[in-house]
Image (cartoon, rainbow, N blue to C red):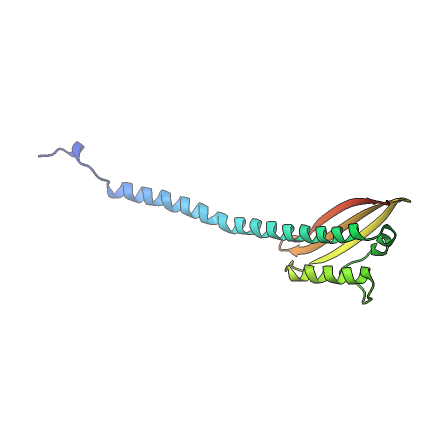
Length: 145
């Protein structure tokens, strides 16, 4: 005959405790998924916004130094309907911001004359997220050659 100390296996109480511990661990992990999803979504939005700001920055770098001041104060909400390069580039940028799906996305450009041969350019892309208004902003300096 076997004694009680030599039996192998788990009691019902041990199985219930192990199941409870596993359930708590799984619930804790499941609670992290919504937060992780929001972080991934925000990361994608900031990447798209930064790429759009960089796109406009490259357009501005390719403009003639004398034409940079024409971009000052431009926003995607007021691009104008002209056929000049400033209006055309603004409308293309507005369409690109709309196409990437940034919620309530918009862009603004500021050109400041630092000296007679130096301009500071600030390009900002804004959008709305559930936690409020967000922005990606790039700043560069362009010197007259």
